[in-house]
Length: 227
Image (tube, rainbow, N blue to C red; front, top):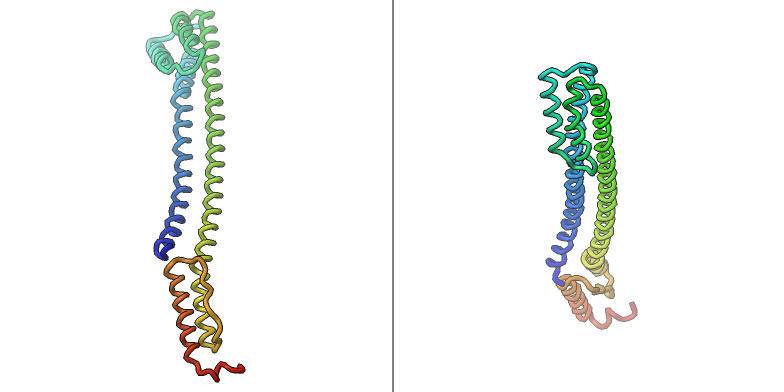
């Protein structure tokens, strides 16, 4: 493989690994957002509406509601009707629609029934919120493990790329420097070891070996003798 291509491949590998880790983190947060939004959109609206109706009923216990209170209850009940998201919620809201009128008129039995139904409605939605919260927690845990796995894979691949870069590029260059230093120091027999590095580096090492061989052949015979 050519030197430029191999070096570019190593650099691209490091960049790709960092991008992979970044996108893994982004994917985790992108998936967490909708899970949290579902908790708020599906259940919080109904709970707030039920609590508002409970507030009005607590104020009018034993007496009839005034116009403003009736409007508040009707608006809250309408929000609950438009936000049916859980099994069993439709029946509770339908019962509230039937009994809310007498409760607002001061009917004690209807008042108790409506309050009980509102508590049931709140409990049902809170249970659903806890269930969705556990799902979001599991999603976050799974995402954390995925991010950890990607991080580990990134680390291992990075170590492999570093080892390959050192073996195929750095060590041959160091070998070249050591051979040239040995030749300058008078060592006439040290030669470069040509490994499996890039084509350009391998050709350079072979060229240096040929130059050293040629220089050796220029020495007079007597200079090679006993020494």
